[in-house]
Image 1 (cartoon, rainbow, N blue to C red):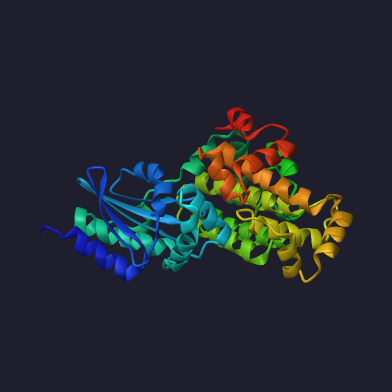
Image 2 (spheres, one colour):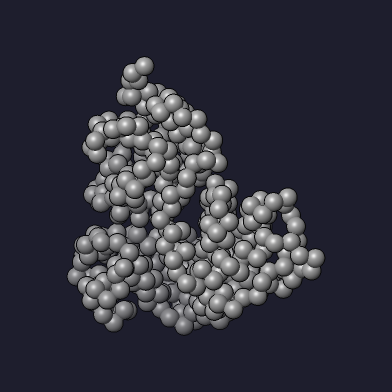
Length: 397
């Protein structure tokens, strides 16, 4: 039977509320979406998606959007992006930056992304299984679908994280004697205090974890341990100043990803990566040895508005105080001016973009809300002590 692919994909797009595309011989021949997007966000990840060559697979992006892929002869069908929860404005601004959305089109792009239906990854995979059966005559279960995740491959290649895998994997072995409580408290305190350097050092010489049996087999044991760790880590991060919404969304995303994994080394690797991300997030929020509620609130506000000009006046209104009082109290409690803190954080974000993207300086400048590229360069040189081009040349991977 000859299938009408465009008709089939249109039906799936209508039923799911998620954009869908058909590629023939490497070129896109069809696109359908219920929502209006000035730029197809797939362009930010097209190279990564193109590496999926099996009949059925998926790609998870940095912000836990999913793209599902089915290959059938000369045809490739790609559905996505979708996710369990809606991405934040900050994440969507970053996606617009990666997709090279024109500044005037960014509000429409963000509105369109928010209108895409949220679906669990399992639902996307069920759609893929259906398409694969129709087009390739092949029956597959969710557990048989391969996981394509370049980020995890890169992480596993790092020696420190390889050590972490070995340590965390020990938690999947049953012992009569438990030593988890003290280690748990040590790890949670590192997350709560944002002690990233201490965490990395601890991993290099961490003792084996002697945990109890909480599942009938090793794989389920590792997944259950992962879920417990995610729950504890999110609470520790909240106590360290991370907003509840951010912490719970990050925890949910990691648990969903863990449930789709079937290899112990991937789960232990993801476990360490999750703990590290929570710790790094808290580290960015904490100012000084004893951060106050005000400094934490300011840090959270800045992290959520890095991709726009940050107004002290607007921040003060959201924190229910006057601008002069906010500036005065922040300097007293943090030891630095509000302006220095904001521009310092923008500089740190610029460093990340310079290292891990190839976007031009003009695009990075616009994304971070600077009035001009020259203004961005002056600020970057002041806080990084080198100009942006020199920093990229030295550090880009």
